[in-house]
Length: 160
Image (tube, rainbow, N blue to C red; front, top):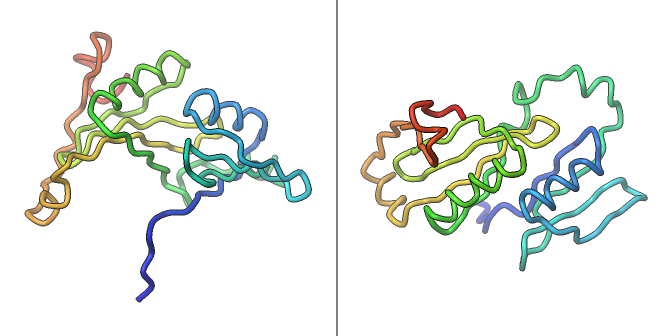
């Protein structure tokens, strides 16, 4: 058996490299580690990490525009935060940047906020409860209960 230590990086093919670089830097706090014009990539990471997101411009823009995001290939990329408060802060920061929150859900073992990057790739920011492994061992019985982080989202359930 191969013993993996974690996910090293995710390569995303994007329609507009500069737009995506700006989104991942200004909204999610990634920093550019390297830009490789010869190969067409931008390698980005969070503080203290090596690359985590590799952005490459699609070669055939018209063909890419005809594809429906999420139908095949990448489902979503999830980023973990350290606390419930950090998740709430992330939710508000996304809203302040004009990002549409598609779902905010309590999955029992974790709480998640889902949204999309400029190319329609689904992203998730989540807080995993400290006893998540024990919950999975017992059977967590995921309920997908909508989270409400502010007055506007109360009563609207998972959509904001």
